[in-house]
Image 1 (cartoon, helix red, strand yellow):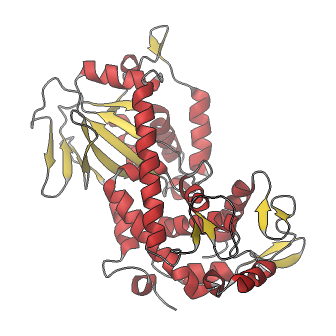
Image 2 (image 1 turned 90 degrees about the vertical axis):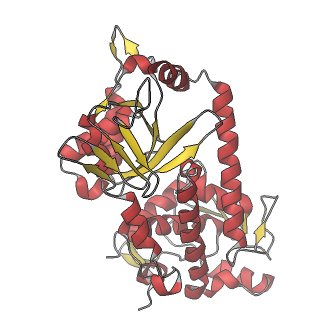
Image 3 (image 1 turned 60 degrees about the vertical axis):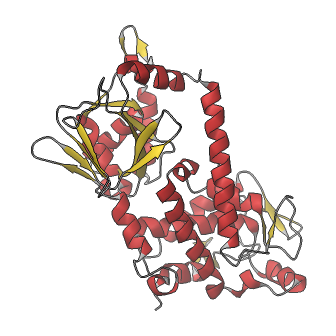
Length: 385
């Protein structure tokens, strides 16, 4: 049994380090202070800076009682009372109980007219942020998600939701600036800011995919500017990008704003993709003829399977395993379908009838094939201990 720590990861064991970074970073002191470990100070523009922390579901759930929700700051009042959409909370609760991520950042604000070390303190030596009891923490975006975490945690669904993580932006604005900035954001009136952010995210996504391709066996096997794949290429640039961060993608594009998350995820996926050809030779087809034969035999190098591989990578992060055995077992996995044992990657198998349709044997189409494949992969991985 080979270990990914030996094959894929450096001596610091990336997976273990990654999970330690994401989880249990919120420390509640007996004196009421809160310490957030390993935060990043992000400068969004000349006049706007804020902290970024990646917190676990448990951290968010436990922080709920420490947060202050000021509906007026978000211009979310109804008849003078905070406007809370209970239907949205119920929907979030369902998602969390399934162990799925909720897209979007949470935003806190350490509201203060004057920054003081007596209220909160950032230690640049260990990248920790200490928030003292005298400092109120206002939740300016993400109240419904935070309350949902608290409800799920109270109901005892910790095991299913424990791998759900959240990126939290922690600002330190006065009340006027808070209302101006987040009131506009929540009502979509600040279109220019939204447009700029989208452009920045698109650029980060493109840079991420470019580095991933250039650092792995994918280099030279990706069509750059067209959507159709020639037989001497494996994927298109857009197919990789969409499987990663698209509308039905597996990972969150917003995480790329955090430089550390950007680099950590890139390192992980680079090593992950470098390992795939060690398991299946199809990824390193020699010529057009060999690719054509592989496509006729199984689904392994079908572009849509990128969604399965991204889901597998995400599951590895969730489990915190540094063992390549999960990858090896995935490519050998057989499922029961209509009373028969069917290989997960079998071509024209009954496993995919009605979910994924074939087009001339060379590509897969259907609606929505990505969602069907992701769901099938998640369920299949549950069979691997």
